[in-house]
Image (cartoon, rainbow, N blue to C red; front, side, top):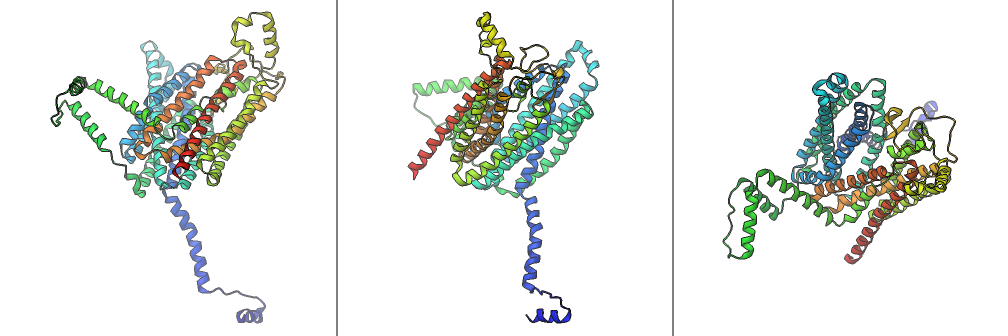
Length: 586
């Protein structure tokens, strides 16, 4: 009071004097804000986020660019792209368990560094080969009667496939194993990191292909290859440094569960077999069973080395699938895999169908951006629901939301403007004039294509631009429009809103796999899960090949919803079993 009075007497200005304790506390708080931010920037979580963002950005750019490059190389034809897709899916399907087993058997830092190095170097070498092919294509076609071109195509596809396998191993190691250890097995922190990684993936899925697409459009394919090459070399150095730092500052990453005694015995037995040494064992009574076992071991030892290796690979794959089957979250993982058999996503199939219904390329790009936003909302919803209702109940709520939104897609099949025509699946009926008249009457709802009214969902490459799984068509016929847009509006309304429940459900199953799989089998089980995902994804392409016309798309929608319903039903069964087991334990 005296200070305030004295100040008013001196000049009428009131001056507040702070005590030393208050001033020091305020200064310490001001220093702690940048200090805490600096600690976070140097912490393992931020380093993992930056490393993951660089890796995802590179993957998205490469997956988009390689499809365009293969189309350009093969005379604007989709054949090489289809071959590449089959090779990638088939290799992960066959080798997923082996990749996961390799992740489990080796130290975490060696797995991450080896996967990172193989992935980036494969993309770099592949980019160099593509630059040479684009620059000297005419000369290469004249060498060896054109067979050198075939060799170049093979090298490109093989290198791209190796890069994808290495990317799968890196994803399993970092997003399925490292994150669990970094969070200290804290479920709340684990859910936050999973959601953040998924948000990064959603953003890069939109921006990365647009960035490399602009480079390829404004410059050339050769410059695009050079841009990807430079990105991978820089990304390799940065990711290697960040992952090495994370491994140093989190001591738990250097600790892996010890191998069980029976596994040690089996490994030593396998080494002795490969070296052809005799197996020293305690003398046992001579029985028929021991004689048969000895003959079996002798047969295995006498096999050539290549056959023994092949036998070991088959045994590892079989053991990996058995480990996947005996997991308590087996049904939840299978349910997630079934969600991959669908045409209800923003891929070239759905966007190609939208074009036949009169949707422009600019509108498709806008819809894809909206779908990315709804996907981000799904990650936010996941974290909120998990805190409030628990992880298992979050999956139930997400499943119901996903299925409820997809009912709009089912309604679109029968809504005005739908081109569905079941008679096209029965050629023997289409010969009759009555059914033919019905077909022609139904056909008027289909947006006409230049080549006729019975075009496949994917036309020739010469009339399209490929951007981030979205097909943008040129020379769209003007002056024509479908009779009604209700069907296509319902379809995309269902697809876009369903992504909220889809990504929330995906994060739920991902965390269930992280929490319930023992550390020694985390890699192999997630490798088999990747194989299952690719297998079910292949089925949806087979569906489209079997029914490629726009008039068949409604049937594909119904089949997709049936697969998705089956997947969610598997999760409901798992949730019931988990709750029942929890009640029995309490």
